[in-house]
Length: 170
Image 1 (spheres, rainbow, N blue to C red):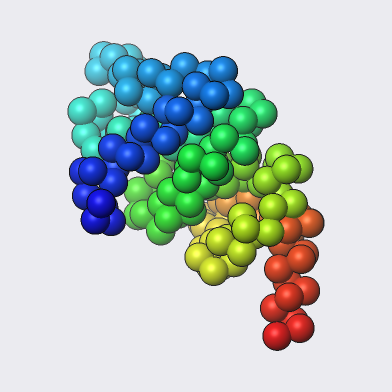
Image 2 (image 1 turned 90 degrees about the vertical axis):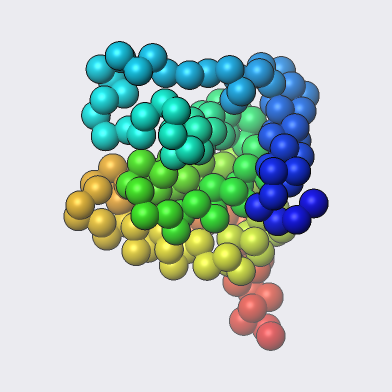
């Protein structure tokens, strides 16, 4: 399928659902969860429940939580890490927040942080540089905190150290 097409998005959704199901999580969660529009907790700067930003925000939140609950490998294998890294460049602070949280939580897992393929993707995508910019955000301190956490998790990661050594040798 063409990049960004509906078919590609459906394949990614199916892959995420399958990986979550394989890890014992509900594969229906990303599809069926909808915040109540009248819930005051969601009126504090989050996108509306029917907007595309709300859907992306909720998916990023699920990826971040799944990664923090011991399912980081499933998130990475389903392509969720790559999606989160790509969304670090979004302008909306709520998307930056959950993208940085997903990256931070995935990199806190020893299996993921020692994976040189993850480290290579992180380096080639220039995620560290983008996270450094986000970590200095005065307008969004929660984004800055998550970005700083992701940077800290990546800094001592065995995979990142291996990629850095290869780059120095080249």
